[in-house]
Image (cartoon, rainbow, N blue to C red):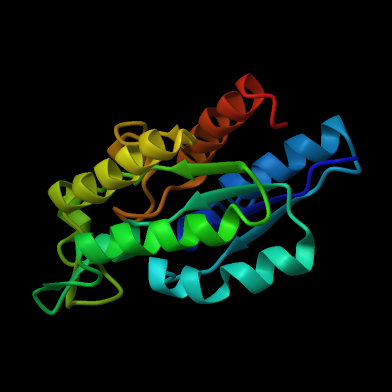
Length: 198
């Protein structure tokens, strides 16, 4: 029986600004389909999603698809500073990923979290699409560390991606371009292959 894999996340998971192949998650899907056409990977990334947004939809999405593997790429939007305040405070973020995990483990034991990308602060303080929204690497590091520690505690896979991309591999200082998405895809693919998930 083939494993149904779902990827949950934000606009980076959704594939924004990869004008060649639609993002790292879609690249992973294409790779999986080439290996076995009966093994699609479902990309459920939604632009703007925070851990709260994901928490609201995760159970229904997973239940509908009878998922066997879940990959999460969440945290960047939580870490943003908007109107001078954290969008989602770090202690709330920790509670949210715990709640997301508890829902997920009702359906599968194969759960994977990606870390948070770092940004080019020249273009992310503020971002071009919202003059009140700022992304700082020191904040992203806090959320990335929270995910990493959580994965260690739960003995689940954590895929670090901080430091993976160069500044010229970011389209707008926050979202990867096609080259950036390719790098993330390769990192995720290699980890999933090593752990015999794909």
